[in-house]
Image 1 (cartoon, rainbow, N blue to C red):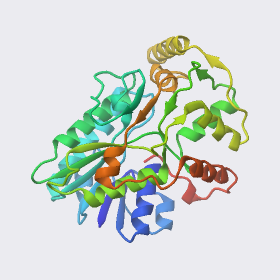
Image 2: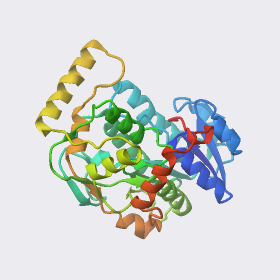
Image 3: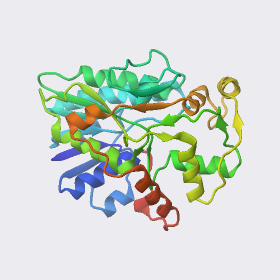
Length: 339
């Protein structure tokens, strides 16, 4: 299999590229800039932006399928930037696939598109996409997923995966932000409930994409469908986060703030940042307050049944691997840019 991976230099995209290469497939990475670590492991890189339809078509030449991972993530930023990358960029990927005759597309979505602000406990793919969100990321990813699934048909097969809270060694998002804020004493629990969440170890998330790539085809049972992906073992959120902090030698988070206060602070900071156009992102947003104060875990039986997905790395084993990585000297292969 010759697969183009958009965002192949990032955390998830890089893990997918590595696994493809390990099983003697031919991964090709599509990113905006060259990644030294991909050169080191002998992966072909084709450069371009998701906004460049011509570059996308040229990059897809000779490929059997596309795994579209690249996205603008995060909880803060300009709406136009999220639209340009997540919606227009995905539409360009679909158009480029059609133009060059690629018949298969695996798309990385997110479970946050179904989060309405309350608890989600053991829900499956029948849960409707939320009509509103306090963050541009799930809002634009929902539109993009809808476009991907709507593109499925008699000449083009698509599938969407929704991995939840991907983490592990090399994570440039969750773990570094957690450690940085905790070390500065700026991390507090929101609410006192022992909420439970799904997490997905990086190797499991990557393997789910390969399983989907193996099974997606025109008329196949998974074509036109979306699947929740996780470790299948929900964790108590602050127990999990404090375990990571302890393994990194950082004091646990014990102080709490009421949910209502966190949401009010998020609203206030978002307003101030928009009015004065401050750089960076607010210390709290309404979306983060909601995510940190509610349970959100999912039924992955459909992925087990249709994709043959079984999380190979347990949460406990993943935590041990992460702890070992904290003391490991960094190399270019350990540091993956976002896209």
